[in-house]
Length: 293
Image 1: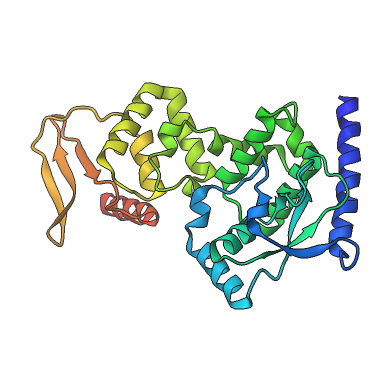
Image 2: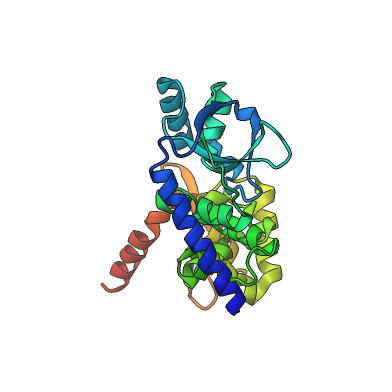
């Protein structure tokens, strides 16, 4: 442990030095335009493919196109033994935008050796300061580092990177959801910690049931809001009721069904996607208000 802490202190010192050089890189580090094809993503690349299909990324591309290139340079390190080839440290979206636009990319070249641990920490800090990574992307980044042995335990990234253990655990809980569950969402970028917490509890209680519902949901091909997906996956299998089933319609469209069972209980079912995520609480308030009369 003492050896690891000593290593972390050394990395923090080197990172602080690296950050200072980047702040005052005028003349200190070479900055030049490079062919995007000469740059490869880092082994710790943290951008999901869906991140390059968003309106935000399209706006970034438009800004870069209007400026004739990226104004803020990306950071790269030379690839050992490959002259003229580089590895991204950070700036994956700017690099991708320039590549898609057919423009050279402005890059700062780190001339001092950067270890994988330093590279990972620099990527993590830059992305957290920008606050533009989804929980899934952040968690996947940490999971790759842990699986590769960059850190010996789940607690070490928090200690080394200066973030809370809870936050690391939260984003890992999103990235560690089974692929069969993540495929139910329109994009894994939509999955938040609260969703992972609900699904995780349901998996612990009835894993087979949750995975069975996930399979049914995927087979429908429905592209539901994240909250509706969680509700469909985490609900317990409905118990049989004996009363007649009646459709619930809005403007001629069936949005659910209701029925009264043999014990006189009213059962109300709303179809997935019929109620927006922010509509659950208002609906419950109306029901409780009606019951209190």
